[in-house]
Image (cartoon, rainbow, N blue to C red; front, side, top):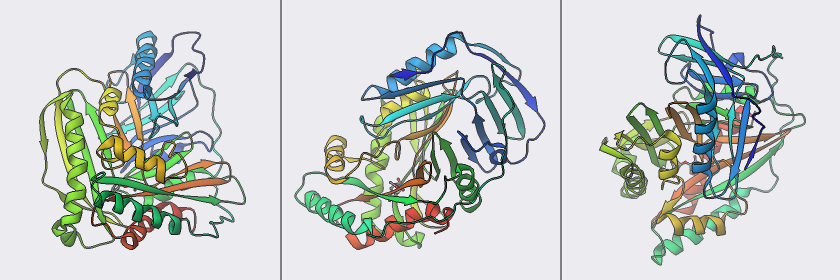
Length: 395
Ligand SMILES: C=C(O[C@@H]1C=C(C(=O)O)C=C[C@H]1O)C(=O)O
């Protein structure tokens, strides 16, 4: 575990502000932090504290670190809403191998239901706003990475036919390289404009727009939006597709099982169709009440990885992913979002994203493979899921 030194307790002050306009437009180029949907949400910059952690205990260590930071902090919160006072942006690794990160920004700007606020930690200096830069000279791989991935899908359907597992979500990685460093704000603003119903996020260079909410906790109330089962268009067909209904049910079951350890009054909606500009998904909204005081990070630790991004049974699916995907996923398909001192917050699944590093962008798309999956159809689905970031990068 690595942490920036915390020689003294953090001192945070939240005050109400006039409507700041578009939150994403306030961000600096370097180290932007964001969780925004339809103008509401949080953005942040600067760094008052950070945690980097890896391994199977990452959720617990993140929770313990955050409890320590917030218990020691001196907070003057004149607004008192979820997301005011001390806040950390979080992005957790998909697997035990990748780095997970929590960042406490120096400045957080937030808006919820018509009220806006700013939180400052310490005495942050002014930060410079340079114009947002468009990507230049983005090059894509000559060899299509989806060709090789098609073989992995076939291998998975064979293993499922042999009864080794029920479902596995396989992801393909695509590396793009630009002629200059990429500006994360360009991607954020394009994604928010093109996919307004998603949560647009940025934490430590991982930038995306996800339609899937792993868990939101506001007081005792928890909510989740599970997605699994995808088509290019034609929501009615999706609702009638036995293959997609089965694929979806694995994901809902795994989420409900995770909630059961900490929650009561768990209720699930009927599956419905969520329409996005690039794809339609089968979706189920799940609501529950926390029964044991579990915080957002503890709930996420109990839920992750659901069968929307892992598979069923979980361990067998994770083994298949390790074997069939050439690289670790990093923070792709892990929980991403924000948490406050009361353990409230929102964590989505980091999908439809790219990990930016100077001039390079690593993109991913994953598809749930079940017994009757057709590799050609899965390749088309992966292409559709890559489209938001590809387009934002000018492809
Ligand atoms: C894994 C991804 O998406 C997930 C997989 C889905 C599916 O297989 O139908 C649908 C939504 C997400 O839960 C991704 O976008 O990379």
